[in-house]
Amino acid sequence: MLPTMPHHERERFLAEPRIGVLGVTDPRGERAPLLVPIWYHYEPGGEVVVQTGREMVKTRLLRAAGRFSLCAQDDNRPYRYVSVEGPIVSVTDPADPELREAMAHRYLDPEEARAYLKATAHQLKEDVTFRMRPQHWRTANFAAFAADFAEQGKSDSAG
Image (cartoon, rainbow, N blue to C red; front, side):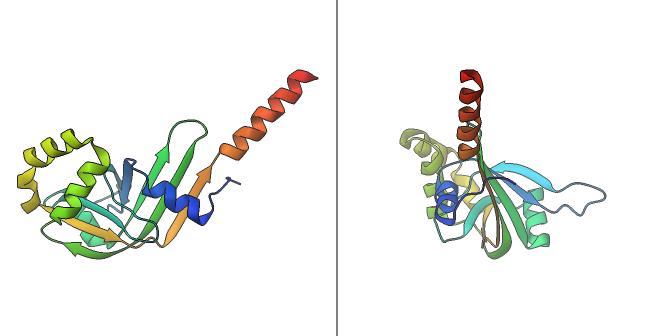
């Protein structure tokens, strides 16, 4: 059984700036779900928010599915991840400009964020915002497992 995170820890983890992997059902033939890296916004107790281009494949799939999943991970040892899945509760078209600015500042330093926003200003008319209410959570935090493993290694070498 995986070592899970308590409620407050999983929410704090998801709220940290990480690249998420968005997953959405892809009904086109015999394809697996579409998985793509994406910036996202989340505040504890709130909705997972993503923005993407109106004409993108993922946008069409999100509209058709009416739900998505998002996984965020820390690939530094000890490994941790949070995965959430739920229904899309709102779509804003065109995208919310304040949210776009907040996400740019979440992922980039201030100077890069300003340059990014200026260079991609035209996308505000082309992007849409999806809000998902987390319904199902999966988490893992291998910190305790790693500590036990390290302790076992010390006792084995001491014997």
